Image (cartoon, rainbow, N blue to C red; front, side, top):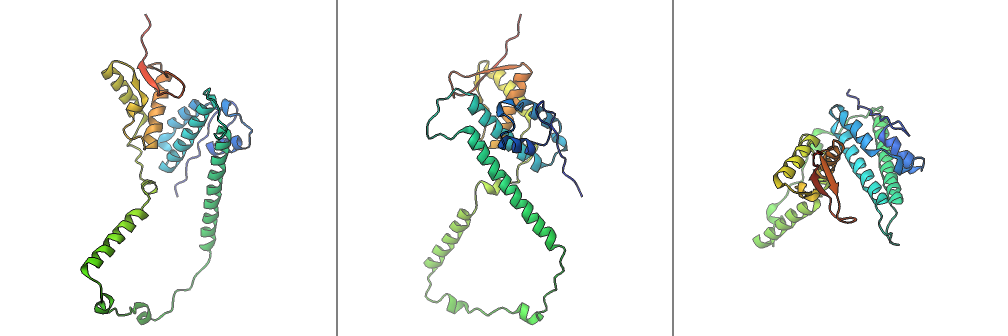
Amino acid sequence: MHNKMSVEYDLKIFKGPLDLLLHLIEKNKIDIYDIPIVEIIDQYIEAVNELEMDDLSEFLVMAATLLEIKARMLLPVEKKEEEEDPAEELTRRLVEYKLFKELAKGLQEMEEEAEKHLYKEEEFPKEVLDYKEPVDLNQLLEGISLEQLHTIFERLLRFEKDRKDPIRSTFNQIELDAIKISDQVNKILEKINQENRPIEFDSLIENRYNRLELVVTFLAMLELIKSGQIMVYQEEVLATICIEKRKEEC
């Protein structure tokens, strides 16, 4: 049986899996301002090749949440009365996350307990199991026109389409090789060299509804900032992020 890898992070204020780090944030034992997000990401990327897809997807979602909330807490935005506090929002998300994990654990325990029991096979005669009540198609379709049949068929097709969740239906279909940080790094550099002027971060995103592409592109931008190849700035608070190539010093 293949065991999932448990990733550890060497943090200055805490050492442990990301789940435990989030748990401590929920309990207000670590200040979110002290979390070295970039350090966590760097260490995780090194271990990415050893991780299963479920682990990577879960980490990207959590990393995006931390980056988003940390940015909101650091930006000098005028607070509105009806706006939810970022820390409270994080706590709410963590409580929901913890609840679903506990429910999943409970279902797994029930499944493991059920496997310990033996069940007696059905003893119904084969004739009873194979019996199907005869259907008189003439009687079933009596009084129904072809137009009515067509209408019923259209309703069934529409029902099947509406029943399919356009978001959840794509879960567990993300390909790891579809979007790589190295590819996005090259994409940013190529676009800057082609344009020969500052570019907007939004122009790098082909599908703005693809959260994985958004997060990976953002991480690629951080990597280029860290290596000193690019500079980023905003014209004003909450404006789009502009990226330009760092000029070589004479």
